Amino acid sequence: NLIERMPYKPHAAIFGSLLGAARIHKNVEVAEFAAKNFLSIDPSNVAAYVQLANVYAVKNRWDDVSRIWQGMKANKVVKIPGCSWIEIKSIVHEFRSSEIE
Image (tube, rainbow, N blue to C red; front, side):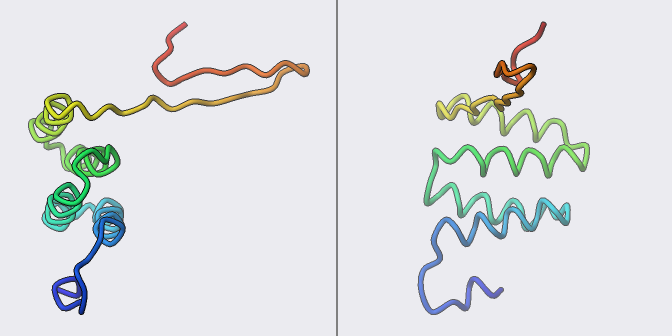
């Protein structure tokens, strides 16, 4: 309701913030509204897809999670795997969440 009353057109950061809050509060309806508007402004923003998928996941809506990931693939939106560094005995080791050893 606040966003609709703003005196100017909201930008992606507004909808990104709303989407983040919806994820924290597990509010699917608000998350869908925020993601739809966010993606209408910035359709290649991977964070919007991932956050909406995470909201669906905590609600066990796995068909919706799958639909989001399929939509990402269809739109050629790619999530870059997480990356971490750790130093052991003065040697820095790098690994990604997608690496399995």
